[in-house]
Length: 430
Image 1 (cartoon, rainbow, N blue to C red):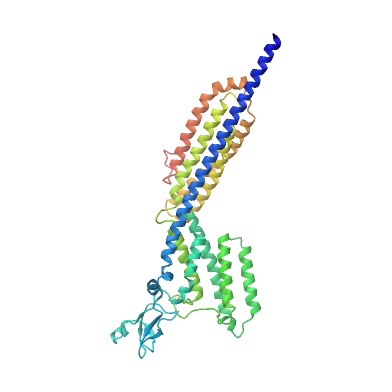
Image 2: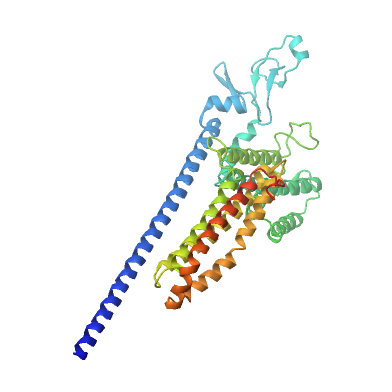
């Protein structure tokens, strides 16, 4: 009889172990499935956001590329390049002309265009040709606008403006270097005192300085690219530095100069990239800093709630791995939100109340990141937790107070996040 009783007890234990193992395996499978669904949902959101941004930037590029695709748009922007006179094709506007012109030449076969003014109008001259808002030489540089916009645009307005600043600053230093070389050799490689070795040395040193400057990747990339292109033209005897002839009101700057064209087309590309993140749908970081703060609070609350439920349980089960996964996800979210908060500077430049708002949210985010050490301690405690009879007696009295503490903590963190919203901490809020 004793042997039969022992056998039955052993069978019950084996059956119970098998049941627990099956339950744990089922919970692990459910956890994996939940994680996969959440991962797919996040990937789907990112894909939709990226696809929308791609469509928006494609629309902007199509509109901005009309002067290249459409002859009428090209004439409106770059002017009339030629005209048919007595079945003969006659050149009208040169590559360095812009604005409305009158013909002071003998006839349509001998064209001499000058800027229109009141004196010529009083003398009976009529407008003869429209030479565009920009010199015709910009037509060949127009694809650079599209290229710059594609390199600059990013997921949010702040990140895009940061990339735009890096692009413009890198190009500016490349243009500044060419002005320096033009001062030494006004005609480039065709100058009488030109030394090729000095030009190559300049190119090498400038590229080295970009690489050694520890500047952002976008700054180095655009600066080095512009430096190489400008210096290769400078060292070519057939081209030399294209300083231009259509002078502006700024000393040493001509509208049709290569340096001016490179700088302006880069600026236009950056403006298009920033506009794509504002219209039709704003993607500004500063409008989401409050939601990001509440997201952190919600994540911390979920983790502590799950920890209390697991701690007050009766046996070790795979739920702890779900909790560990949420801890890792919260850490990643905090890093992402810190990046968004940093990028919001390029949208506000800390002007007005935004300086205090960003300062408060930065302090709040830093305080939340400091809780990562607490989360690691909780993780270690959960891994070593032993559900014996003493533990069950302990949590029976402690479960209620822990839940009350969680609720109060959630309320406190939520109020702190809300206090940051207006950038002012009143005496009552303190």
